Length: 585
Image 1 (cartoon, rainbow, N blue to C red):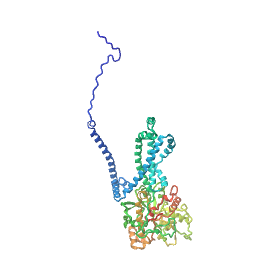
Image 2 (spheres, rainbow, N blue to C red; image 1 turned 180 degrees about the horizontal axis):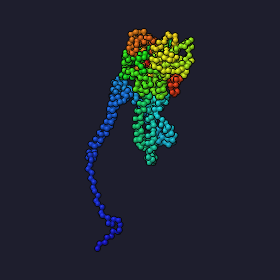
Image 3 (cartoon, rainbow, N blue to C red; image 1 turned 90 degrees about the horizontal axis):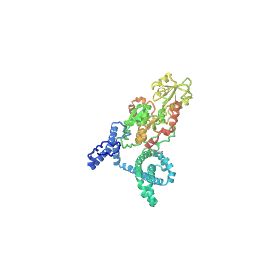
Image 4 (cartoon, rainbow, N blue to C red; image 1 turned 120 degrees about the vertical axis):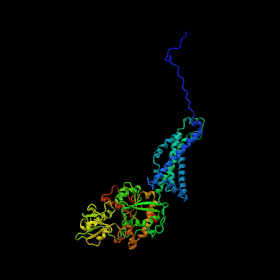
């Protein structure tokens, strides 16, 4: 008889556990051929690293070729490569590359060395860290590009501000990473160094440097990439802030510039000799789209003739004139869809600039001949003379709205005859109805343009009260960001061709030449007899000082502008036509 000596418990009657299953995994390719697998993985990674950027470049090229993007602002990669190749062959690329590398390396070394030394010091000494960390933290959050004007004031124009900006940017990356790395060195490492009697130099060389070096190198690597970004941005900003080089221009001497403050009625307009300024073709051909309210007005004649006689083409420009009203053209000009606008600084322009549009009036068009009677006419009542005629309470007919530059000479004429914009009744009429309304008694006064005023000139029942001030252009060329910032060389070339056209064909009484007048009539699509029935315009590319102030006063009186008056430098830029004639302010 056998005796079971196992005590009671939960496993007393439990069955024996089943044997574990043996799992067998066959070795994969990476175990069988580790070298080949590693090479394939590296090849795939390299292919992806090359294919993705290449695909993006191809999409960019296609977008530019199909006009999905504006190639003037985002040129195709092929265009950039071709331009770089041409500049390299011409010897222009490498000096610029060397200058950029010199600036970025100098700034990087200054920022790295100073950031590392200070980070090491602040990480090692608690009192130094307590004293310097708060002000440095405050400076760290300041956008570094915002410091460029400060450095420009400190170091002047040149390489100094750009090197200082790169150094300031790099400094903070290296300082923070170094200080954090030193503070993260385990206390046990420091204690071990002290136990073995390490000096400060030995502690740095054998403990702090090896332990902190990986983090310091990471910070330096990040700083290197940021340094390149900063130098590119700073060079662009500094280039736009630096004055353009102005060289003397043959044929454009003292008579090519007059004092902008000279408002004399008999001031002779600026002139160069015939054929000057000479063409200076752009390195790359450019197409410019210029909007204008009409192609038939005489003030557009210099542009039409410059296109017809190839003056723009001599500069490497293909100028295309497009008819657009100013209110429609302004937003397109501000967005860069138009390059220039041949118009006037109307109230819409002032409101646009006040609203953020980057637009400037860069050249004048004409001032009236002293024989001209284009302007405000009044039908005289019994016993009235021009000098004593009062316009207070009169009905004034005009085809021009209150936002036009004509408001400036109109308010001047009204004030001379005991009236203002609020004391007359405006009636806006069609161009063919203004004269009819005046002669038929529908209005008491009217603003008559060329050549309509000829119909009442000499009739004693009517009197001319005033028009555009002699010697003061009220319109001309307006540029947007394309020619002001992105391609000022093309902006100067456009004005150079315009000025050369004026000096060559419109310098004097151009209407005395019958053949030339006939050509103008054909270009403008007008009757030659009508064209010669009024005096010639005094083509005048200069902008008078204070004109935009006087215009804004008239606009405010008419209630058509908003916001505070703009200073002249927000509306006017004389530097481009000054460069075209070689004038140094």
